[in-house]
Image 1 (tube, rainbow, N blue to C red):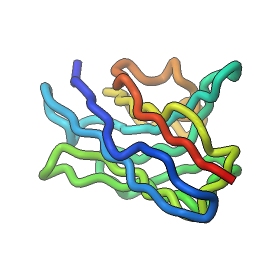
Image 2: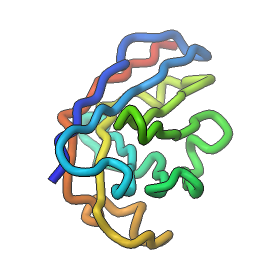
Image 3: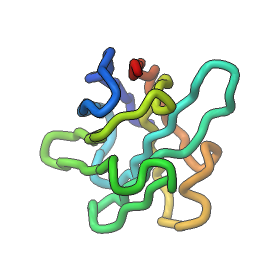
Length: 127
């Protein structure tokens, strides 16, 4: 399995931006499909974005489409989530996840698809 460490979270005002990073170590990063999920207090973990192993395919939750951008740098073993025009409802613990599997556009939105997780980084958006 790959080890994942997130960074870049913090407190930001509504309309602001943050960039999250997910640094991977262990086995070959470029093999992994990488995702971002978030969990707000009292709510279930929800899908945010996913990117294929090559970086050529991405998918987003409707709630973040047009505001968030997922990317990766396989040379640096790092995945990113650029978050713009943040809203208070984006407040959550954001976690990155890795899957050493074949791309499946339906399954990639499910937490169960992923087999490695980071500890998460808190994002708080004030109104």
